[in-house]
Amino acid sequence: MEHFEPYDADSPKEECGVLAISSPGREAARNAFFGLYALQHRGQEGAGIAVSDGHAVRVHKAQGLVSQVFTPEDLGPLTGSMAIAHTRYSTTGSNSDRNVQPYVIETMHGPLSLAHNGNLVNTDSLRKKLLEDGAGLQSSTDSEVLALMLAATKGETWEERLRNVMPKWEGAFSLALMSAGKIIAVRDPRGFRPLSVGKMPVSGYAVASETGALLTLGCTDIREVEPGEIIVIQEDTLVSYPDPGKPQEQARCTFEHIYFSRPDAVWDDLSVHSVRQKLGEELAREYPVDADVVIAVPDSSMPAAIGYSETSGIPYNEGFVKNRYIGRTFIEPTTELRKQGVALKFNTLPENIRGKRVVVVDDSIVRGTTSGPIVQLIRDAGATEVHMRITCPPIKNPCFFGVDFGTYEELLAYKMEVSEMCDYIGADSLGFISVERMMKALTKDDGYCNACFTGVYPVPVQLSLSTSKQRFDGVIQ
Ligand code: SF4
Image (cartoon, rainbow, N blue to C red):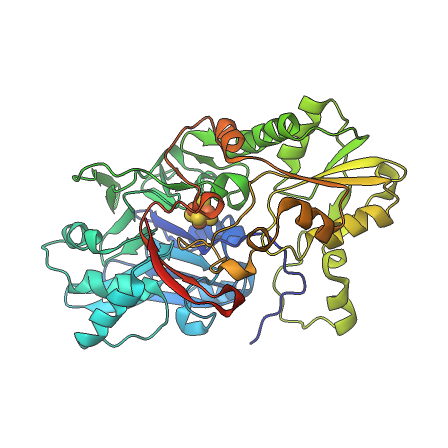
């Protein structure tokens, strides 16, 4: 059944969330369902759970939200104490049933299930090689390429095969794998995407893209899966295989802090909520303005707006009420409702805005489709001035590591200077935090990917520039 998105926010979209559970002696599917629910924000196009009882693997997956994909009747047959799960937003591969994960394939070493977050930058050549070798590909995603390559690699164990094949994969991958008797988790050596592991309440372990999902499951002793580390979980035993190679420069995605992760996530030993608050504080120092109230575009910008308020001394108040449940739906909106755009998602609180000079804090401007309507909503509520402040630098370059802005031509900041963007969205002023101030808020000098802001890619990527109908293919180091 087709899904509709009545309101499509102009925020970047993450490829997906992954989860794995080993809970010896207990059914894993129900925990996987609730863990997946806590990762719903990382992908709303498809969801799936694969479960193993040590012999057989059973999987249920489909397009839609977690709550739409799973009923008690769907979960019932998923018996077994090990599970991996996935929630998807498509950046590579179209959004169709066959691209929904986990993938489950039969191999000469037994069944293998795979759930992937991230994006490889050399998928085309890997896919070509697989096809030349006679592999039959069923989906259009790089995740299937990962599964088939892993199955075909030499090695006595899955962890050995994984270690042998990893050097061929360039780009971002945080993976949860399940064989008949083991859960295996791994992050690429640069650590683009997050992945954490924790101890389940009674026995066993769980792995998840975000620590919030592990807390939902009641996990303790939570720690990050290190870049390049392979973790093998068998029943109640966890074995770690650190990256044996030369340490690579790390490239954590800064956007996890700015927008993707839930505020209760802890990543790189940093609380995402605290980072966002500090981003607001730095933004207030970098782009101060005389105003009467600071408001946030909910939800991700609320800590930053509080930080801006505390540093500037301008009172914080709520300016919007958000309809939190307007995700994807089976019901097609009417043309009139579609025209309402942001008004479908946000109502203003005019009593907090009327007659005031307003600072509105948002996390990003990608394509520039919603900032103008948001400014207009604030003006319609009676603001005398609207000053927009953004907690990331202008996004001028595409992302190739699992985020959905893949071309220059779709990026507003690639096409316009900040002053032109300000006119375009109809604000009285517009200020983006600089890369330097952003990293100060993160309290880090390096170890992060900032390629979409700076154009400096941590791994070589093939750039296809089609702006102005020009075509340029080059490699940027
Ligand atoms: S290019 Fe931007 S969105 Fe992509 S991984 Fe790097 S920081 Fe994240």
